[in-house]
Image (cartoon, rainbow, N blue to C red; front, side):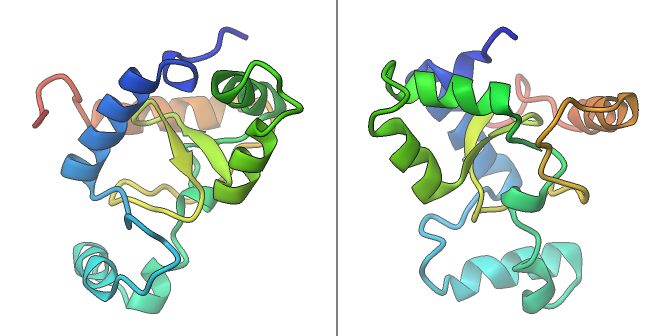
Length: 146
């Protein structure tokens, strides 16, 4: 598997993550804080309760990729010595790869593009691949706010 650019190029990763913050409400900035305003905003977007929206996290999104191959890409992108501190970083933030917006994503965060059915921990089925491709067409990162 060829590792996605965002797993090893921090500037590319941050550009895409910042796009997701501005365009699909990726957050909250610190998931360990209450962030009432953030959660209320997403609850309003989804027209669900705050309790419901707080269950919709990147860590259980169908675009959140945590296959062994992807986790290896993420670890190598953090530190070539994959048995070094990279595992601590990945574990502390439950990092995965957001297939929709092409950036490393923290499992406790979320966004307004959340998809049921994740995380993806093994090779994707054709149905999963098709669902993600259809979802990606909804968002044109090139022509949205930078």
